[in-house]
Length: 616
Image (cartoon, rainbow, N blue to C red; front, side, top):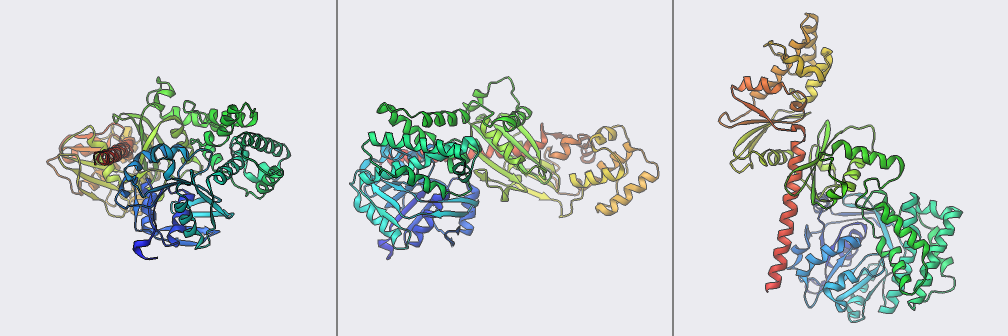
């Protein structure tokens, strides 16, 4: 296909459906641009492409990868595909309005009845296509999809038949590479939408409420009866809409569902993970059309209301039993303003910062005024593999998180936030939010020591780190205290009662342990040993580059648990050294601030694009 004749396609939303479509359209020779707001996923795709496994096997690189829809405004796209959840679509459509042109055709590649209306409200019926997806997959990594099945054909059609040629052209491009996609007219399209939605509605909510995989649900006689009744309700409502199915339709549906794998449907996964669901466009639509025709849809109504109750934004305990109690404990432990009702935090725009340190992972949630409303600390190497997931689940269930940022050692392997930043930048942002002007920041962490120098605007001007050895860090301190038989929680208090002024001669952990044992054998008091260890760390810090003309601020987990270090460092530098409030959470606080700023910048950028387009 020549460059000038290439079909230009933009894809908004890179879940499994969006990623599979992106690969297949690229294979079909289309000029494909993709959009994903998650910065970590975006980085992985830019570097390593999109990888498909199992049903399809390929690795595909893309040169047009964007973080916002507005960035595609100059591409003169032929098609813009929305492969998002229905509740994510309105914001994306608002942003995509700047791309609207006479040639643009938009495609709803989504599940559910009437989801195309979300596009029609902005682009109009005459420019809107609807695609029925008959493939699925699960995310294995941020850029890898395990394609679980493809049951051809897919279907595509113009919602009012006015762009039938565009629909057929799109289908032909995919058919040329064996990704069978059938162009159909608007009447056939409506029937296909209802058929697919009835199938989705029959199992999705049931699996989510019952915590059952598709295979488990269809294998049980009691749930099978429920599934049949849900399908029958959908068929009866469809009939009132003049959508006729063959007499054996229910039996065919049951046979199709019995081939479903031992995995959870997408809506069930969202419900289990306390995320918003698309229930309004699944069972909810069957209920809505049933009311229109005075048809009772008792089971669809029951499952719609159960799912909504379990995802109620004002309820913390979306999960029953032990899971709900765990959510409560996590929230109550870190909530800073306990007098406020839970609905208060759901009505605020909140931002999450996560500092994935070597020893502990710290979480901070702030409001739009950068005021912390929640702090939580979790041991990084936790025996409970679900610990991180449980904390994030609780946070997202209680707060209206608009944007999030990850930092720290583990940030490069963490894909559950919108953006990632270095702990250097996050530390500077956290300290500078309330302390303007140039400064030194000393961050003594679990595995390293950092000196960060900020300029007059609070930005990072320079930074220095200790060598690869962990000498003088939290890990070093813990091991030495353990060898000396000192409870690390008592060290700061012990050291404050000593006037000892000697330090360890060696910072190698092995030799330092031997030296500490000599102190113990010599009968040295625990208070003197504690102060000697602190002096050793202070001398290590003093050897690093520090601007003596600037004020000094301490942050990090070590200073949080060993406040007497402040006194030692003040004596060492012959000047006042200040410890920041909540020093262990200052980096996660800075990450939350960066998340807030990124969210505001993105929104202002999108508004400017739309306003400029309107002026033109």
